[in-house]
Image (tube, rainbow, N blue to C red; front, top):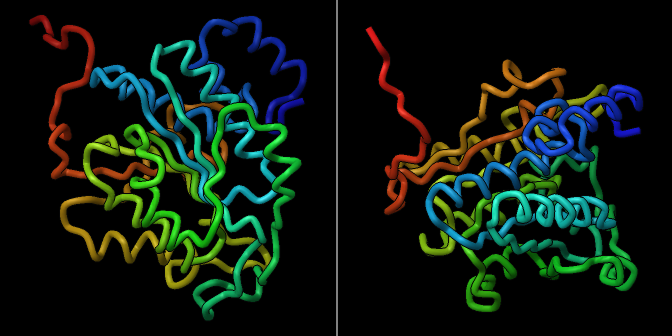
Length: 263
């Protein structure tokens, strides 16, 4: 069964909403609904803006199951929306680098965790492209090397504060290469019994620093999810939006339908 949804419930939801992917996501009846959500919403925004092709990214591929899942959702969402979706996975390929200091939570992570079997993963990927190397280098050369379609969604799973800060440089690429709002999922923002993560360390610190240092863009939690999606899941608090208020298309109206209220 899909984690978080009992087999019988998942099967029932699948029958009821088999042709309604947003509802399957809403009820968690797909694998990694957080990945499905950011891909679908990014494609829906692109459709409303008249953008025919977008890119989605996973930072931190590790063994590759997440990237394969991202590829799966990209294919299905493309069929539903008519928006073509390219998938990229950033990783060192060699596991985690050494932590730089306490901000990288060395009591939780250490060098060489999450190594990748590149040949095995590459054999399973259909269209996704691996971008291998230190994220500071690969983000810097990404546009020149790949000329990506506008980025619409990013899954951040780099574990470290330092690597996440470097990955945030993706938000500085030319405006034509990114949508005005990018749907983001952050894997490592919660604490655990032995893994104490808070605003002064790890990924939460990276997010806080980004928001302190930028005035015309922001990373904001999408706080409607835990109220509108059922059952309530932790991923609802892990979805953020990168909003670029200076983007030339940021103010374009995108809501369908007549919103006039009758007396």
